Length: 283
Length: 152
Ligand SMILES: Cc1cc2nc3c(=O)[nH]c(=O)nc-3n(C[C@H](O)[C@H](O)[C@H](O)COP(=O)(O)OP(=O)(O)OC[C@H]3O[C@@H](n4cnc5c(N)ncnc54)[C@H](O)[C@@H]3O)c2cc1C
Ligand code: FES
Ligand code: FES
Picture (cartoon, protein in one colour):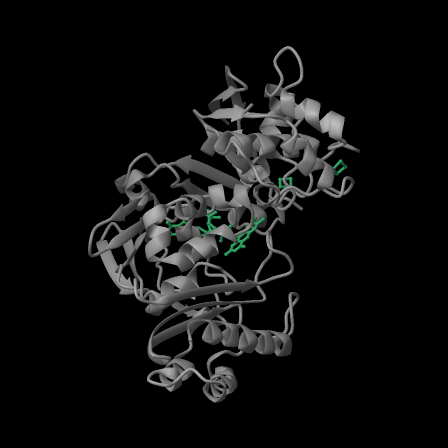
């Protein structure tokens, strides 16, 4: 049953400074609400103080310079999929955004929410992992920057402290010469929570892999890079034997489980096939 | 309770509401505009679709405080004196049967038509992917939009 309204307070922060002091005092940030309102509807949203951060301009916008691209935490999937430069520099982020929920969710859901909510099935993290993103966290004590790779600690556990907000993620536009690959596997194209998903980038010369990065989501407690497969493939030729070996090695990197959406066995098999699809496409 | 100011279908109004109340409930119960429907209550079905400052949203997922000061278009705002071209086309092409999904379908279609003039069936399918219909099988809805003429 839906939550009981009097159990909640909800205030809007009109300045970042005020928002940070509210967070320090225990208020929980509320951005697009596409994760939180589902909990509220199910009666699972913890009662207490919530803070509307959706109007904070410091958390908004996509900034481009020659050496760095910064996405404010409040950037929505619609803003990403409609951004011509960003989707050219980081195609996976555009492709993943197009497949989140459906348009109305893409208009409201934010990347900060996707990251902070830390669902193993979240669609944004694998792309951030292969592009070696950094994440900026802000509190009254200042800003700290982490490698995104170090942000997710375990199932629904992150580096984010209760008094902190995700401020932005930043990426270096240095992947022009790479192949970019994104594949989400769910029950249907829209409104589907992934059973497995893969982001991959690779640079090849003459059928040999110079550099490769692979990340999967929905097949472990957090999205994760596949270092066994990556280091095996680096410097190798793209041929049937190497592809088969890479597929076998994948079981060292991902550990899918049975849950309501799928089985571990199915997930591993399909993930291996998706990896093969990627590798066949880069040759 | 907090005073919330909204521009609903072009008219500025104020209501008293709990800031965390769903925009859907404020529209249906506070403003008595019952065209907007509730299906799932969790963002999956699109029955509660409205435009918030011109953007398609699920009103079941928006706490009303986040709409404060903004413009809302509900299905009641689509027609002025007579039905709008989209509504007429839905009637003509069989785009509505039981009608529970129709207000949401119309609003989502309106959002699509505002963004792009020539819509392919693929654009329409993607644009309406968040709106479920148990009756029509979707084909008539796609046809309704394609035959509804240019921008509305
Ligand atoms: C119908 C439907 C379909 C969906 N489909 C997908 C899908 O295909 N793929 C997918 O990945 N997700 C999907 N989602 C989940 C959701 O839309 C995304 O995770 C979205 O990005 C969440 O962002 P939000 O701003 O709405 O988060 P909110 O609900 O506002 O917040 C989520 C969590 O993040 C915290 N938070 C938000 N912003 C910040 C910040 N700046 N700093 C610190 N903490 C913050 C909140 O406190 C909360 O714990 C779907 C949801 C629905 C309802
Ligand atoms: S009632 Fe809002 S999406 Fe179903
Ligand atoms: S007309 Fe009945 S659900 Fe669409």
